[in-house]
Image 1 (cartoon, rainbow, N blue to C red):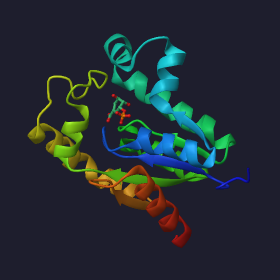
Image 2 (image 1 turned 90 degrees about the horizontal axis):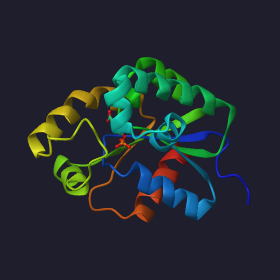
Image 3 (image 1 turned 90 degrees about the vertical axis):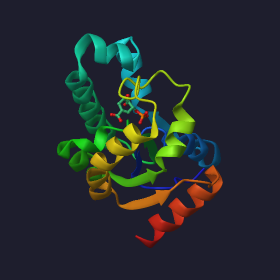
Image 4 (image 1 turned 120 degrees about the vertical axis):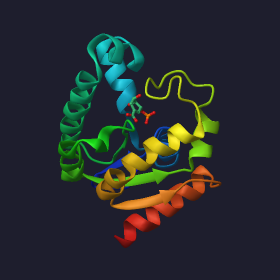
Amino acid sequence: MEKMFDYNIMLIGFMGTGKSTIAAYLSDTFAMEVVEMDEIIARREGMSISKIFEVYGEEYFRDAETNLLIEMQARDNVVISCGGGVPMRERNVEEMHKNGKVVLLTARPETVLDRLKDDHSRPLLENHKNVDYIQDLMEKRRPKYEAAADIIISTDGKSAAEICEEMIQKLKDK
Ligand code: S3P
């Protein structure tokens, strides 16, 4: 199959905005390779993200994210599902743009809560599963997410197919 893109697609956005779902859809539809940053880091460290935070602290995890982004610059046509905190570091945003187009997925706090209410793999939301907390953190992060993005797609009430179609159209128009 021909390559869809001669660059990487970097999916960014708050936890629960659908990055992994869209990555899987792109992989199924266009045979693109997917890199799930959280999954790779957890596999390499031999422990869950929650455990990495607990044992080594958040900075250690953030450094692992930066290193993985740099590693991915040697690749193309890969869809990279970035952990929600990746664009908070300016260095990461620079690295992402070197060989990627950055796609920001957004969702309302209510949608995020609904998607993650039974999840226990996000240390930053553990014990904070309420709309106010999510909204507050989302608002704090919003300027950095928006500044990092080449294109922005709101995901509320849309199917994966609709989101991907919108994404491909917007990337073409860029
Ligand atoms: C984080 C998001 C998580 C994971 C870690 C920290 C964040 O990834 O990297 O729990 O800071 O927003 P997802 O966005 O895939 O949930």
